[in-house]
Length: 222
Image (tube, rainbow, N blue to C red; front, side, top):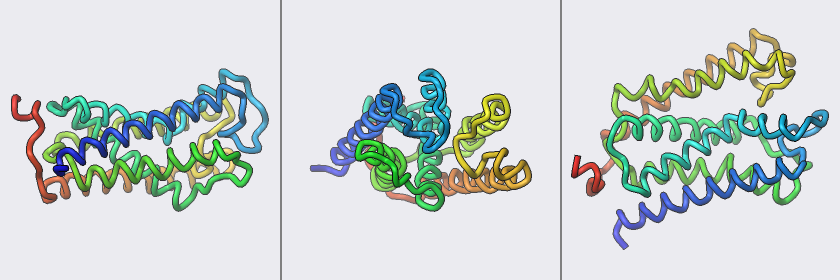
């Protein structure tokens, strides 16, 4: 099997794992399992679903699935793909790093809950990063894509902090203003922002230096 063929199967596997993990996690939420809040007080079904989509982990996995869909369909020409690919790569890498450092799975998780947690926080980040490192596609990180790729995480952060006081809920303890205050929350946000930009810049630097492969079909035609 050629490296190009192996890369295609790798991207298909990444897409499949991300979609399965997202659907299974949502199914657990809809079924009434209190997966995401841990020991928090019960909330309505609608609120549980809303919170599901508010998690950065969920959004980054969704973006990975979208980016993998573009790659599998060989639709990688244009800035839309480049921005989605870069945003998903950086976002899912941050997801993996933060999960490894600061978000261990709850000891009360059932087997299915633990499976979803590890797929979303560890397996998909690893598949995405290794796939990008080994198979590309290359030439898809440009200077003009850096700032657009950061729009999503900035909007997520602003929306989360703005909505938190009204709904009394924050998705992660390191941005929970009620528990740690605005000062520490803003410091944590600044550190995460620096990490985002550093990873995006590192991706651009590496993209120009890693070995290239045969260009995608749509890239040739464009």
